[in-house]
Image (tube, rainbow, N blue to C red; front, side):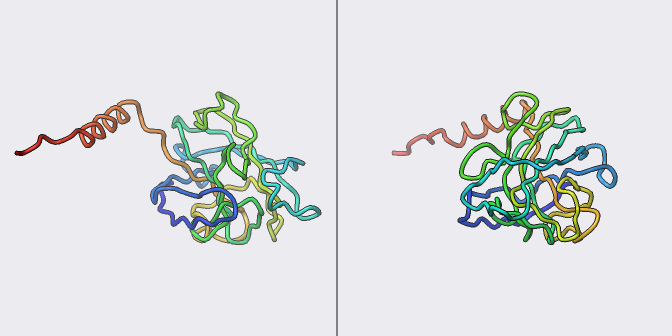
Amino acid sequence: MPTSVVVEDTPRQDPLVLPQLVDELGNMPPFPPDEWITSSDVLTPYIPCPVDYEPGGPPNVLVSITNMTPTFWTELHYVADPDTLLTNDDGFINGGLAFRIDYGGLNTPLVFESFAPDMIFAPGETWEFVIQNYMSPWGGPASAFTSIGVGGFSPAGPPSTGSIIALVVPEPASLILLAGGMLLLTRRSPRCD
């Protein structure tokens, strides 16, 4: 679902940067087919961010998501619902603890891409990422992406525990137009003597 977000970067882990307009992906229903992912989760010993890991605390959960849309997505982020807790956050999105799903930096939650490891969530592709020290006070699964609304705008409690947000990968024609526009902007104007 196209949505607007407010990002608050914190110095805890990695930089958290996103444009204001993103798409929310989730389970059907209530999400429409062009925003549909399937998801599941299992416990894992993998620690994506050792700096803030709480030994003996809540478990680490490996979440698997599959892109069921015909769209190529990039810049995937996990955003916790208001009552969901975790320790590998990069900051806040709409007031919810959030992190970029990637391989780089201090926080490395992405552990698997079923296609090329290119950070593009392609149609039919499955990604696996880890939520560190995951806790839902009502006992909900980490893979419950079942309510429309991101962070503080998501209804707290059952049946949802978090959101996946992403950007659409620009089409090649759009990239060519963008590159052409940038070239025009960088050309020097003629001198007037």
